[in-house]
Image (cartoon, rainbow, N blue to C red; front, side, top):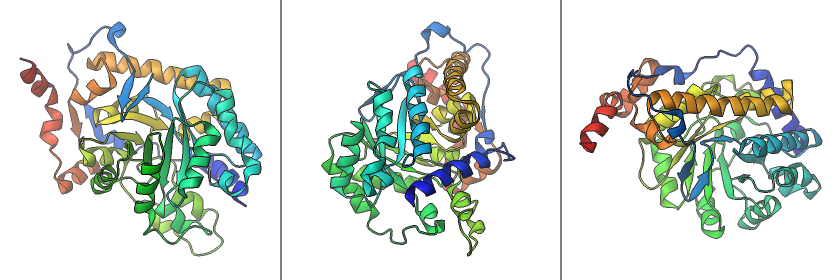
Length: 358
């Protein structure tokens, strides 16, 4: 049954890419153009470091799938693309493997195809410590993702209905494993208050996983026969809103995922404080509809264009993107005003950095 659900998820996620409104709240983020800010392309490095983790690029392939023959083939191709482009990659939820070891190869193929790459194993917040270790061992994982998905579980016909133990279980897992733990939402966003709670229990990074990309409320509603939950389709905060809400919280880096459509969204995320940026839906669509070679080409192009935009902005590293001036408009501006976020400071950061340097 889990394997069938994973196949449904892939099919419905790809369907969401068709006929979908291309706009999201990243469009409310605009860079102030400084015509003399540009630097030499040779001075730009895409390397990023956060929470004790070192990546060659700030782009990573975020959690998608696994648990059936078809999704195993997708994981193989994702691993090959990660290997060829040097990006980190996460498996989808290992719940299927933890319930049935016969599907282990649909996940293990990622390590077989990408033996030296950075691979994240993905589990849910109800996983026992022993099973968390099993997931890590299966992949020889470099980091562990724990996903938060209360809205998905609520809409899912066979989903969980008890969430009160999640926080303490994250704390137990984080204390028990010897690799970094990254906690991520699946498309409904992490608030500042949630990220502060995660910092208290020693999580290495928080992936805000905001609204704007693959919508698992819609996916799970599409699997229901009765009790329509479409009123939850717009639940949560956008990725841009989450990044602004977190406001560079000390001692816990944030990652961005959810609604990443192109390299400009990657740079916007970095400018709003993300240490790295995960993409899934657009990459899955490319793989399923055009094949593995097209996926490698898309990731390679995105990385080249990312470096090009950083060159224009004068950002030598991903971290320096957070010194760029950004204007916030539209619905995103209303969110910031309600949450007390300093919009003037965001629009004048370059001057602040220049004054500090002098």
